[in-house]
Image (cartoon, rainbow, N blue to C red; front, side):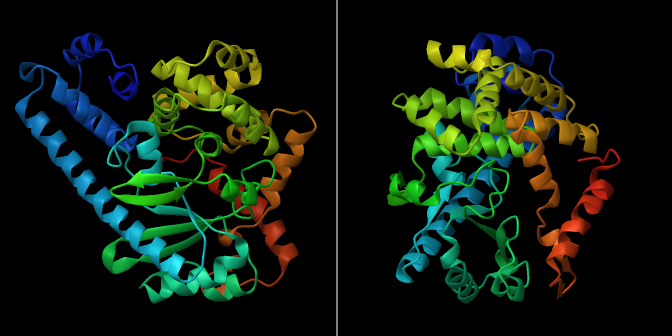
Length: 372
């Protein structure tokens, strides 16, 4: 039923049939776990009232209302931060969040998100950190690490009293891109998205599509919302420059990640792709295998997540090249993040030790099947 709700081509008749045998409690929990509560709420409103128990309809409405209020609050904070950065001369691009919701659904409240993601240049990180601290945010990693040039998985800032999180990204932190993101080209291609009366700087749709496919692959496509975003984006944005998408994916070595995301959106959510694009996607046998793995893990929601071996095999295959794949996996396995070089408030200054520590930490973290 969630697959039907998340599809851009949702079939009301099919939905009415599924409702008759649904486990409502499990459905609501899965909808929240997979980030598609808004999709469920929208389509339940379209059904005959007699098909949905009153208490369930109320529960969905209340949870959706809470999500809407949360997104409104975060969008207001986004505008405040963009104005703050602009006043300091710090260019920034919004990725995912409300901008992606507008691109994929035409409604900033259709996506659930717990943080605000911004792309900034590495040379602006220090000034951005000072600006966020002046706005009441605290860096979750020590500022001394930022000053020392340590590159985390993302520059994360929290505002505990308001329950707000901000993540700053750039071409150095986005380590799951096989090749470095051409950040200057992304800024050159930037667009302005009309969001609640504000012109918001964002990635071009072609860049955004590749970005969210890499993001989904990074997390093994374990949430339905990530697939729904791809399906919604390609369904709603009729003017996508597919040659441009292919070039962006090729430039960052993410062709197979792109194909996997498009295949999942087509197979699971019936997203309509141009015949030529669909043919290219279906020719990629590696993408088909990755999509099959993702579907298996998706339908096993609540069960153990992929083992260390399964994760490594997935990452090897998603690089899609017999020569580049081992190098890609090795780089991910040996590139330290804040979990490797941070021990309490102490920051390691031994880069080699950080590199050697990482594979052991990964083995300890993922060596056994852990509950999500």
